[in-house]
Length: 314
Image (tube, rainbow, N blue to C red; front, side, top):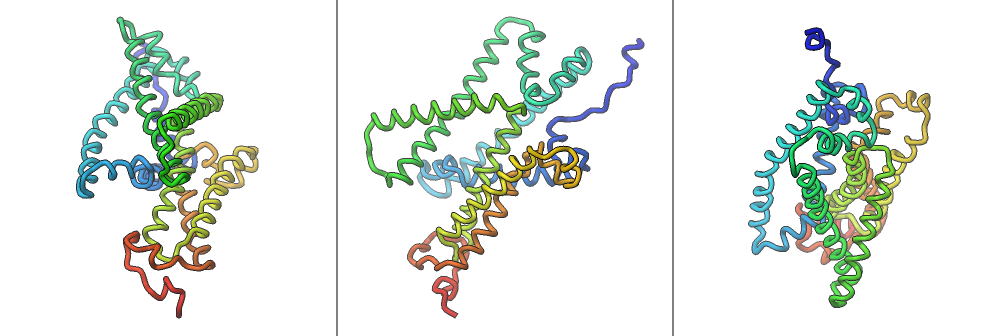
């Protein structure tokens, strides 16, 4: 009876605690962090990635593209609830029976080891380990094949202008990209941080910049190649300053930054902090350099363009 009446430690949801710029932030700050991730990382992946482009290429009409997206959104609540239930069940189980194990794994890469630890040591029954391994391989293959396909298609389309090289070249490039991404994944395992945080940081530096390019190209008639390149370089510099610069600061220096010190361990804001500087610098640099020719913009803008702006005449 004494054990059942013990005082439990305050519940700290991992996803929620990583959702604020400051580790001691309020619920309002955590909501802002989640919005920054949704608008500048998730939306970048849904709008500006090569996979999103391929979805529209493979349909017969433009109107069918949104229908495909809605079908995938319909399945999202099921997967999200499944992740939530699994995480909650693991948390409750370890808090009730193995608090010391939970505390030992509640930091760094240990957070990724909680589910495998449960399957190997406490799941019981036959076939659970094989089921988890099959799921891991299926998830890895479904992510790798689309990523490798996108990189190969981007190389052939953007760098070789659609030139046909034959099956042998395609297989070689697929193998090179496959070995490359697998090697990078192995190197990321050396970082003492949860995989989700690492992915958010990488996505912020890539999808955020892609979103910036998309926004500049569709919404700003005056933008040109020089401006876009200047914006991309600026966005990468801001990302490197946050990820590399803050990592080298000691506790005293971080304390002087106030709430911004939370960016050292919070990667939810990386997309916003790369997209916004890239857009601002891209627009400014474009107005300092010659404008694009009107023919280059035919059918590419979402807003009406001004002949005065395009020609540079007063």
